[in-house]
Image 1: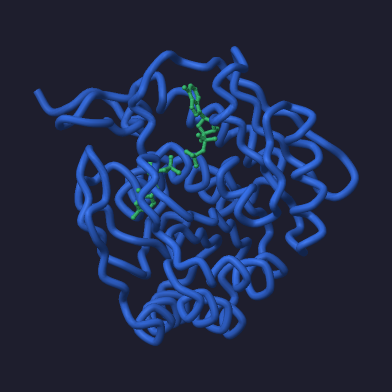
Image 2: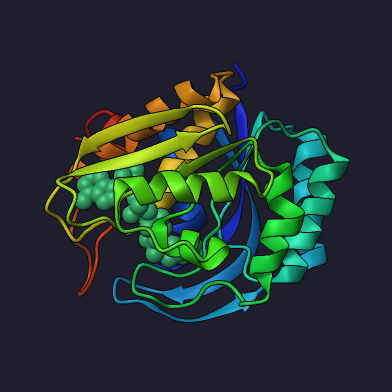
Length: 268
Ligand SMILES: Nc1ncnc2c1ncn2[C@@H]1O[C@H](COP(=O)(O)OP(=O)(O)O)[C@@H](O)[C@H]1O
Ligand SMILES: Cc1ncc(COP(=O)(O)OP(=O)(O)O)c(N)n1
């Protein structure tokens, strides 16, 4: 039987921990057929990102059209989009096709602080992509860049969610992984009226590379399977919690979260 399909529009992480590699692993672990529109090729390992090459925006848009018009998609996720030109091309291509709910993870930098987005592209996120999004999933650094709101508490997450929702997305998920003094990890979902809190344990690990990608890809998977946004976020939160629990060290630096916890044991 043909499984449901999801598309990620994202950059490649040569180290395999984040970006489209994390998205594909997650789609696969959730039982979906995953597809990619590659936006950038990063030179990346467990220590950081030493450079990246941007794929021409028209090639990104062509990848989106090629897979959605032939194979079809029940949901789409965006990750590293890198430039204002790519954001405009992605918005234009998604307007031409029916690809289901759109989850926008507005990736701005790696967890090591290496920039993955041109500064002028922040305005394009606000004007071109957020109004089209079913859900946006910023971390607290991205919240500050996009809104100017510096979140230091759970109350601050609510304030930021209100400001982000005014930019046009149907739903906002303000992730709380960076509130390191909070003994739990609270992710806050907002639809302009009601707040929904999703809380999980905070594990004492530095190996959280690809965590934001994995959460957003798990939510995208559940949306592709027809779940509502609150149901999909509840699924995603459970999925990322187990993926952080299963994270492993890699190389000299930071290891990835592991969506593979959901699979059966490896080959004998
Ligand atoms: N140490 C941790 N233990 C458990 N969950 C975590 C931990 N760090 C982050 N998370 C969860 O991983 C997801 C992504 O977290 P966050 O760090 O906020 O965003 P990003 O990975 O995009 O920087 C969120 O669901 C967050 O609550
Ligand atoms: C190609 C690419 N896309 C996204 C990221 C961000 O991953 P990471 O640094 O682990 O941050 P979160 O996934 O936790 O938001 C990346 N490094 N490379």
